[in-house]
Amino acid sequence: MTERSSFPEPRPILEPTRITRRTLLIASAGITTLAGAMTGATAYAAGEPTPAPASPSGPFSLPPLPYPENALDPVISSTTLGFHYGKHHRAYVDNLNKAVVGTPLADLSLEQVVKTTYGVADKTGIYNNASQDWNHGFYWKSLRPQGGGAPPAALQQKIDASFGSLDGLKKEWLAAATSQFGSGWAWLVLDGDKLAITKTGNADSPLTRGQKPLLTIDVWEHAYYLDYQNRRADYATAVLDKLINWGFAADNLAA
Image (cartoon, rainbow, N blue to C red; front, side, top):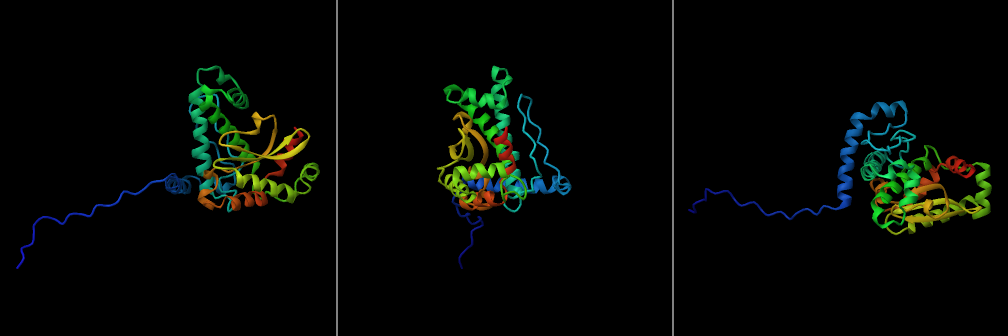
């Protein structure tokens, strides 16, 4: 009879799990969803805009969303919007405040900070956070619940003159959104006296190109990955058809 050892069997060595940025994004979103379910239900039920989370002391603050976090469902889920707004946008504001405190930049408007620090080598961090803060605030206003549809008449005339038709505009905008390599933005702008579509990488915007932004679509992965994974074209198409805020564009055009 073989005598059994009194020592426990050695446990198998497990291969380490590879953690990617997407894994962390999805895991963090699960936590955000649980927190939102426990704390946000009352505000959502009331249909009120989501209040901005508190920011550290500084000249810049996180603007409130113009709608509840669940208002863009099902095109953009409340999970994605809560994570995008409450984590990513807030981080840009917090980092910007830390970087400009006690400097002359703290006395400038957000748009002035973007333009002043653009292309300045030792101000790259400030520029990136300021521009991303501005871009996100503009993006939230570029969307609205039950958006899409037909633009106001004056804007439609401009669209027809510049693109031939609304379908022509959407086709060019979708091409810009899907062809932007890596992270960035796809914009409808006023360039001189005509409308145009342009795209920018990372934190850049038309503010530094002498163009007037009218609308934008965020094509950073955190804007759509939880809902669409790698299907950026589906996300951009859904935004154009169901969420884009033509009234905001018309207001910017007239301003």
